[in-house]
Image (cartoon, rainbow, N blue to C red):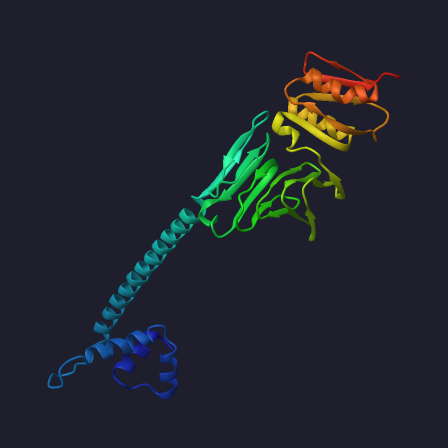
Length: 302
């Protein structure tokens, strides 16, 4: 049935039951009822006039326009609230995010809100949120750092490979390439790696290389890198060479037959010649520094 036909009959109160049912399904039916109710908002002693068809159509259009403007207004208000809300969330949750990144041959010392101190080694990244620090002391680390932690609530260091938790202690964390190492120099350290918890007292170290865990000891008071040295304990010589490449930004051609040589020791990070001697002499290897910063290491017997 046509909408206009139903509206005209509805105004005259002439709808059959079938037509009334059809009228009730019209999109404008609720608005029509509302307009009639508005027409009745007069004093009882006033004449109540039912609107004509043309008048009803005009008022229907006005109602729709007002409702459209009302919804547009509501949408703008909701959008404004969302923008303000997101702005507040961003301010309180990201403005207080502190990040530190070190480049090659660069180190930084960072004092945290609780006066804990972090020494960040080169090519490393550290971040924490000072806004939530009092409730939860959590840092995210990529690379290597030495921590001197003030006693307090739990102090967590999250790395891509595992989480280190302490209350107050000195420890070193290395998470780089395929190596994840935690060394405890004071107090007690708890390491979570693949849902397994290991507790390290003073002098103990957890070293994980390519997923294989090993518990070792450290007799040093601090990690050697704090004194500008790279230290290793029973590490594949190929991994030591990889570290030398990163420390000095060089390329090494490693022409050695035995790829399973294990190295225990250290090399200086500020003297390439000295570093090469430290890692080659124990195995009777030779080396040569090319002009293009390429280094060749080979067996003397070759």
